[in-house]
Image 1 (cartoon, rainbow over the protein chains, first blue to last red):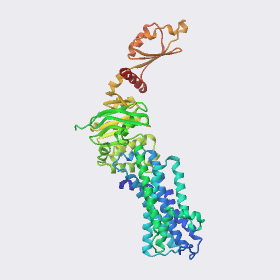
Image 2: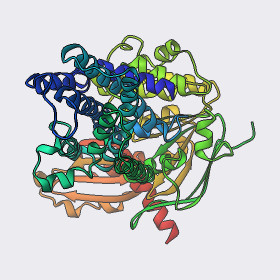
Image 3: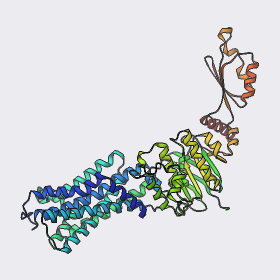
Length: 246
Length: 306
C-alpha cells in the first residue's frame, strides 16, 4: 500500500492547481480577511483578535479543501475509468485504495495548516504558547479526517457530471455556514442556530478553544465524533455497494 | 502440477431477468492457451469478472488453482488485463508499472516488464496522453508485472493496428511458452485460430463449443457464395432456374438478380451451379464471418436440442 500512497502523493504534488487551492489559497485568503483588521480588533464574544480567530478558520478551511477535494472527485473519476477495478486485480486490500487516498490527502493538508500558521505569526504577529501551536496543528490535522471520510462518501455516491456540483455545494456550504470565512456571530440568529450544528463549525471551535486555553465544548466534540461515524459509515456502505456492482 | 488452473462448476449470474452466465461448467488446465469467443452479450466479460472475483456468482462455484479467485490473486498467481480496466491518470507509464511490480508478490524487474510490453520508449509519458494501442500495452504490462501462473486478457488487442497486434501476440506467445495458462476473450476468429490451443465458444451465457480452432471452424464450416444472374438478356426468369436443388445448400436468398447462398461444401455447390448451364457473374466465395459462424453453430445447437 505504501507504493500506492507514494504514487498518489507524487501525483498530488505535481498538480499545481490542486496545490495552489489547498496549500497557498487559504493563506492568501487569511491575509485578505485579516489584513483589513487592526492588530487589537477583537472578534465579539471570543476574546481573540481577528487575526488569531481567522488563523484557525483558514487553517481548518485549508485542511478541508485538501481532504475533501482530494478524495471526492478523484474517487468518482477513477471509479468510472475502471482504475478501481484494475486495482482490485492486485494484492492491494480492498480498503487500501481509500486509505491511500486519505493518507496522501492528509500529507497535503499538513503544509496547508502550517503555512497559514507561519503567515499569521510572521505577518500578523499572532503569538501563542508552544503547546498551543502543537495542539492546534494536531487537532486541525486530526479533525480533517472527518471531512476526508465525507470526501470518500461523496466519491462513491456520485459519479460523472454530478460529483463536481455536489462536492462544490458541500464544500462551500460547510465552509460558509460553518463560519470558516466569517464569524457566525455576524449571521442572523436563525442561521446561527443552524450553523452551530455543522461539523465545520465544531471543527473550528475546537481550534479556538485551544487558542483560548480552555477545554473544548462537549457538544463540539460530540458533533465531530457523530459526523465522523456517519460519514465513515456511509462511505463504507457505499464502498461495499460499489464493490458488489462493479 | 495436477490442479486445475480454472474450474467453473454450474456457475450462473443474472442481471435482473437477463441470464448473463447460465450454468457454466468448464475446466482449464495449466499451460493451456485458451480463447474465449462469443458475440457481444454472450457473457464473456461476465465470465472473466466471475473468474477474477470482481463479481460473485448467484449459483455455483469458481475455483482458481483450487482456491477462491481473490485468494489466487493475493497469492500472485493471476495477472489480468480488463477491457474496462482504467489507468490512474497524471502518472507516467513507468510509475504505474513500478506500482504493479510493488504490489505483486513475485515481481519482475520494472525495466524488464517495460521492455517486454514494448513500452520502454514511452515509459516517461503520462498514461493519459497515450494512444489507445499504447494504453493497451500499459495494461498488458500491469497484467505481466510478476510471475503469475494464469494470465487473463479481455479483448487485449482492441485499439491496436495490425502490426501492433502481431507484436502483441508474439509477446503473448512467449508468456504461454513459459508454461503459463493464458485465457483471452476476443472478437477476432483469426486471433483465436493463430494463438489458442483451445477455443471456447460462449453464447447466451452457455458453452456452445469447446475444442481446437480447427474443430470449431469445421463446426461452423458453412461458406457464403454470392453471384448475379443476368437472365433477362436470355429471356429467362430467375425463378425458373432450379437453384434450390443445388447440393449442400443450407440457405438461399434471391433479391433481384443477386443470389446469396450458404453451403456446407462450397466447391461442390459451385461446380453444380455451372452444371445448370447458367453464367454467374461477380461470383464470390467467402468464409463465414465470426458473427455468422456463431449463428451457424447456434442454429445447429438449437436444432439438435429441439
